[in-house]
Length: 387
Image (cartoon, rainbow, N blue to C red; front, side, top):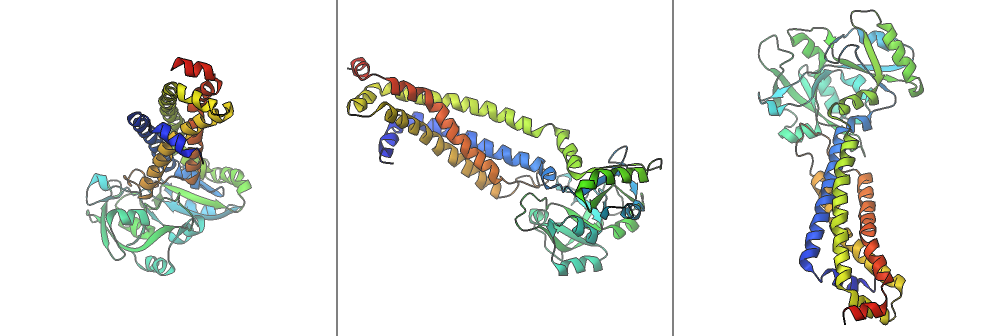
């Protein structure tokens, strides 16, 4: 630390150049943080998928329905712990397409058993079970529209018209929250009672879109999935059962390999920043050849000169990079800017740790060549060149 003033004064020599380099590094790590948050948003379903959960859908396509009577038949298969069904409602609020969000008729008690990562107060749970048109809203969705318990919400579904020909009315009676220490849980959903939905819809009575099945032994999930498909083989509604993670991965891959896209973009960005930072350090060393010669004449060893130049490079990248990571974390902590598209939006700690590692690696790589040149510099050559 006793040489900090010397290192800092070297960076202040060309203030405009240093500031521009810092801004470049700042933008690079801000972009890194935001892209990592976006990746986490697209792969949240895969991350939260339980090893003991299966998804059962129509064998042909997810858009095709299955009979609600399949629930009890699946429940009777050995190794199955619990079964809950979902139906894609496609609710739209205030007749505005931009106010679309995930909405599902379901059964609450088996849902809470299969998905312990969601919590709801007991009094709200009982209110839902007693209110025929009751709805439970995820915390993210509630905050998005500034709803509160007791509000009446009207939704229009282009898939499921109401027998009355009008909108579907729901009373908000509960709020879904993520369990403690669970950050990657999607709380943007809107859930309501299946019996209310099934009696009110004009088409498709007795049908659901997919099932979630929890198994008693995760090691037997594959054999249970096979048993489920065999149960409904050669029926009018054949099924495809698969692990929840594989089901969610299929959705994520519809827009491409998010990880490969992220690596490609960031590789180009960091390579460019490496050239910028390396050029800054090379120019800085060339402009201080005489000063470096004086330092060596005063007794600074080659290793100490090497360390000073590397410290200067690392300080440059640390100031810009850590501020960029901090800005990305602060931005993502405010919640998703587009909750309808990215309901889960945060920067995981592991990506911050990786970013910090990249900051120091960038500083070392950008500064190593100029540092070696400074270390090998001969005193007589340095003083004669600028004398």
